[in-house]
Image (cartoon, rainbow, N blue to C red):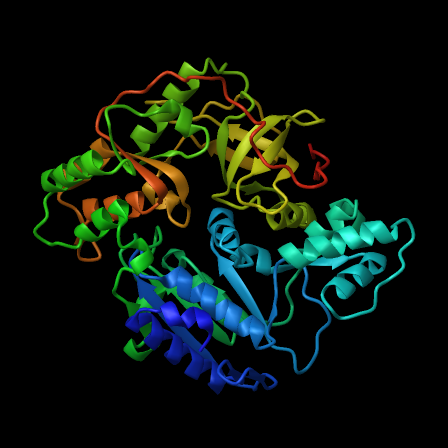
Length: 509
């Protein structure tokens, strides 16, 4: 067991040992650091389930490090290297860009599930650099790149393990070394999937086709996928394949937000009692805020979490109104949420380009201004490794009591967006923000309706998901009021890619 395992709780240690045993069965021995080639027909699916703070992410990170130390190659959506018969690989996946970026901030090289379905096609000349950085070839000589540029690429890769980032550090643009994208044709090896409560049955089946060995990490207290009648996919696994973490890890034991989340498991707890607990926690700890109004300044980077669509639309329009946003255009810095990509089949390559860069349904985006062509927008994709791109856009601003959204401007086809100043709690799953505002009147409305979901009162599941989106501070908003902004919307705080990447497409009419 690795050094990290010394701080495991008993249930984490038991889960680690069960997983290590399953990996030995498919030819990966963590204890001895020995690898054997993949075995035909050998399959394993396990799930690590536990509520927020039970140590799922710590266990995932420790297993990743143990696999890497044993010689397993980590596969990202950016580069896979040469295929070898004896090669063992690991891909760490999350359903959203934001969830993947949370893992990357903790040193775990995660990518999105969607991204792993496509592989980049590298220019052969620059592929030599990628192979060298990955340890599979000699230092190359490439026309136009100096030794100093290659040294910068190597230094970047050694600290970040990103091939595109390393090539960008050498002064290359993405269009220099990536010539296109192709659908994955061959299966991979071992897959870790974080936020597995968001998976539906079809996604689970697709992942099983790609990964003979699959390990799911999920929270059974979250909301099941929208339109799912069967609950969460890990609930369908036989009991021996579900490894439960029940204890709050000692690093999170003094977190008042997690204390509130776990208090919701009490079947006797009523909504008014829960609100008193929040009010009391706010008096003791600044990480919990009893808020009399929505803070508009926070909405530009972390949406207000609501249950009802009507509430979401009202808050969005109030946000735009207090910022003086015109109906006919967006302001730089307005938040958006990608609602899909509307392109015909003949433009499959354009769709792949955008999706591979992180512009997938549900992606959180900041509007940076108009693009170079009519109908195009410059965008910053939150959580994407290369966050800046430009794309044909259809922006929809929904209005209260109106069936059809207002469209300030649009391309004939391209990426579609809704406003992102407020989102439903269902759509917030898989994301986290430093500060989270939860619109409590909506949770109260769910409590008054008396609805249940998967055997639990709906209001408790909504409250649990909403408050566990907060990384550092929870704002429990109890009044339907909005503050005034203290400053205009901004974009100067957004991290740009080392070399800005434009993916402007020809608009088809």
